[in-house]
Image (cartoon, rainbow, N blue to C red; front, top):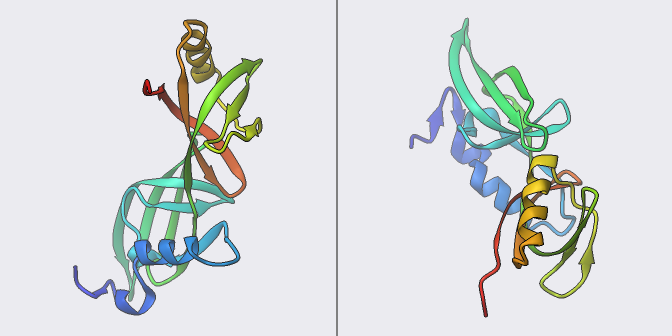
Length: 167
């Protein structure tokens, strides 16, 4: 990959992966980090209108003397589409995503009772109705289930689940 792209020196501003790693290892545990728009690619995550989203479409065009970027994102929690046009030399916030896995203990009216690997209870995770129905059905069959969650900017939601491996 060339180090200068659309008039931006990517070695100087840093790649998305480098900046994300730096944000994860920071002492203050930030919820976002700034990234140059020229370093963004499809499937990267950005913050638009205060919501974390995944880039699903990205295109570039030249407008006069500068390059513009048109991006379409999908909110990772609600699924809403958002569009944004910006100069490729500008910076945009990207969320720090954390993926976790928990053991499902019980379900009470869209509230999941989960256990961490250390045995601590966790009851503050959101789940959509369709996934909750499938979880309840599998739990009623007596299956031991593990749920996978994504956390970004103070929100956490169940994204998938699987049957726990037999020991």
